[in-house]
Amino acid sequence: MTNDAPGPIRVPVGHPAAAWPQGGPDEPRRGDPGRLPITPPIDIHDGPDGLTLEADLPGATASDLAIQLEHNVLTLDAWIPTPDLSGSRLIHQEFPVGDFHRSFILSDDLDRERITAELKDGVLKIHLPKSDRARARRIDIQS
Amino acid sequence: MTGPDWAGGWDPFHEFQREMGRLFQSFASSQTFRHVRAFPPMNLYTNGEEFVLLAQLPGMNPDEVELTVTSETLTLRGERRRPEGVTDDSYRRQERFMGRWSRTVGLPDRIDEERATAQFADGVLTVRLPRAEGSTPRQIALTPPPESRPRLEPPREEDR
Image (cartoon, rainbow over all chains, first blue to last red):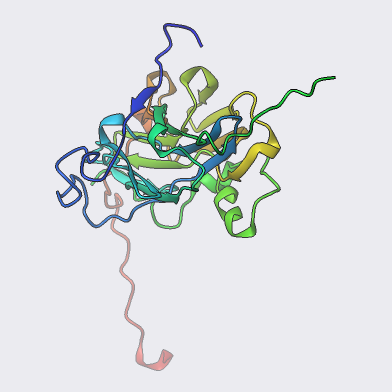
């Protein structure tokens, strides 16, 4: 990656209430309150240090994204503004316009204190490091 | 209200759609419906003066998307790659579409391709396609024929 390319935006992983961008979960969000939450597609892959989760959240920005960890449940919410196309009619629809929501149960061998997340071009990447005791230790075999 | 309402019955996206992306074979059947959907999904708006097409392309950047328009069609193509160094067998779950993709859609009306603009932000591509001058609906006056024709006679009793 070159230095002048816009880098990913770090997203804090918070505990409930602290992570909500505006007020709290009870505060009404802008937009259509009746719209249904959309389940974003995700990938999860294994790496040497832990798991990486990637979620497609097209239209999401860091200011309207919340990642929360409560006990062993990781929840992500992204509020997507309705496109500003006032005066236009939707004449063909292949994707719903709405907010993304999905939760995951984390296994015990992940280090919940060191979870990090970044958002770039509408893809959220969450790093879920293995806890020290769960990490496979490579032992050199002496010949 | 400007322009005809295309919402009823007319579907340009199925006319020309070609799905080039290779779909993964290894999904559980409950997940496959997600991948049968065309990539990228597109919504089309109009206000009568222009069409606005939104396409969801998360993870792609402008250099990786090829967009071409003619007066009647729009073509998008590119390739969505998985992160470097990530192998097949390291996936525990794989729901996101990856691979080469290409879509060509027919537009409901002629557009002025010279004035088309596109912008890309947060994984959403927005293409504005102004309608061509000649294609705006023109009111045609209905005039009576120059000479009045003989009126139709009402049917006579004996013809019934």
